[in-house]
Image 1: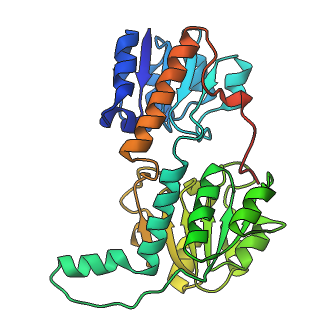
Image 2: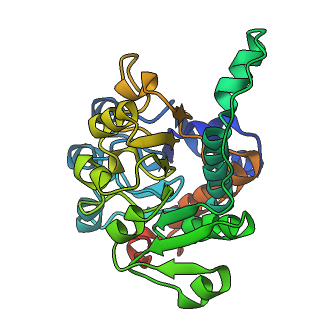
Image 3: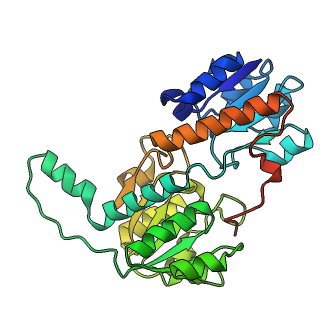
Length: 324
């Protein structure tokens, strides 16, 4: 069996997932993803299975992959780079890895938040340059945080926000009232209603037609002056040009993001030089603990599906959560 392995986290991190693939006897074709549609088209045709990250798996890629392709095993949970409807139409098993990275991404969200509020990057750079410049930051205790998408990750952010003494408001179509009561999360009738009262907005929804560009010039105009936006979901949820303009004007006081609309970004990407911005290279789930969990689940899903057995999680059988 030829398996195309593209996720760099899987390849770069030691753990039992490597032994799983080795013992399965696959012929591994390793590439450094995420791969574009054109690169995928160069590689497919004689591949039995994908163990993929955020590669472009389009209708054209699927068509060229057939009839050889038997399984797509997604490392992680985001399926927006895969034409899931066409995959289902062609009856190709599509597996994914829910429930493996929520604590890690929530911790990264708070890393971005604290870095912005305490100006940690700026201060660390001053000291590294031999400068003793003491900038005054802000507390997060008592601030209102709006969590957009209260799935597994959003809930973990809420738990931490509660521990930090923050006021929490949120929106999700699939509301867990028991959880909300336990951690003091106030339900809002819409994402807009939550965002408009927040000092901090934390995005944890999937990318869809409804969520693409929900942070834009019009929505920012209704938010509190100086709001801080955190994005550990998908870059396309935020309109890049509108965010850059808002950062320069001060209507958005800070943007902490682990994702961009183009990854990796070109050298002239406008957010790279925007003020009060902390950008990390899509590493929110990249810890040794999380990678081992995700990679092991992705490998097991792949092996089970190729053996004709039920995988641990098949995407078209999963309930929708954190969807606007």
